[in-house]
Length: 586
Image (cartoon, rainbow, N blue to C red):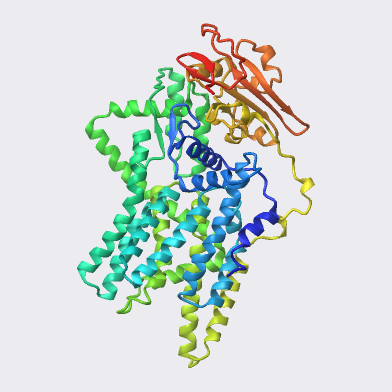
């Protein structure tokens, strides 16, 4: 067991991860900064000035705490977030090991968990700086507590199980399924054991109370800060309502609305098309749709609701098929079909004491999760990745159960090592059929890696300052909050910035950003290396960083000529108040 725990951090260290991160990851580490600096349970603005975002707080909390406890990290939160993920996966090995050994033996558990760490997708999760790793940790502990509580009723354990259900939700919003899953499973296992109705109600009550201790506190604090419920992710402050009656703009919106739905890539492409709609594409899109809905009569609304339900059912079936395809790619053909066969054991009637029912907990949770993300979410490959350990674990348990039955059938009940050997052989076949970590993931010469800019821009900005950039990674580099760069002239971008009190513009030029630039058709000024010279009344350059590989320019949007000058250096960090820039208070 001591060998398994450090595997994920060791592989992460050997792979020498770069401080590169997805857009969602940037949102989480930005939220970590807001959580610890302002105790904010939401991002007050993200992508668009009027759009707030509510994210599950557990992973950002762990990142912020690790960042604060890491001396000399110099704010390199991206690498810290990757280490948090690796440590979470390592710690998850402990409940996974004990959960598996409860229904097999230590040898089978060791080989199964060891093979799991060789999975390519499991390895990627340790480098992703996203919520998958922390979600796996919390879910494995929750499932371990559920099996123990099913075997032995203890009010204290029931409270802990409820707390873990709440933490599952606070790790990822889809974790809301944890409470109904536990309630349903306890009801079925209680029926199998023949416990009294009174005792069963007591079990379910303790779990529910434990859940609402954390969930209720979080929901109350979140509502006090935002006026929103915790099941929402994106919301609007309604500070910058917009309207537009330009026929060309309305035609673009209708075209976007009518485009094919279902795939995340298509939805993302639609968002890119919104860049051209100033003052704020997605903001305007949502507001105009809301205005259209307000004018809809009851009959049309009822018809629309029926069509929506039908479309959701169609999408759920399509998403389930797509998610199963993702799962097959993640775990390999052997584990995938073994998992489907193992699923049949869920429908077998349990024994009177329910002892053969408990190992099926993992299978049942995996399928409930699959159905839930197919019904409630988009078709996103990484949503399925969290099932990798549970699919492998559930399959290994069924391997061992079948192998043991086989040895008993051929009159070898005393040779339990035969069942173990057969199980290890099947696990080995599954491990070698799935995508695995290989030597190509561990660079031998770090000097050949592209250089990474070490910037000091973040020290110039007030925490949470809104920054217009093409990509959220650029806003992270300078310590700001991402405002998506509108696809329009610099004059209109500056006008929009002045109106919404967004005073920073960050121009990043390097290879990764070239892919984003192709979506911007009206920003020829972005490649101008002398913006301050050509647009002196609009922007002032505050800092420049340039090497042979990249060039970064940080610009401050100048206030309008009608705004009273305060005599403050325009590049000094300031706060915008009532239309006048004032010095930041000390």
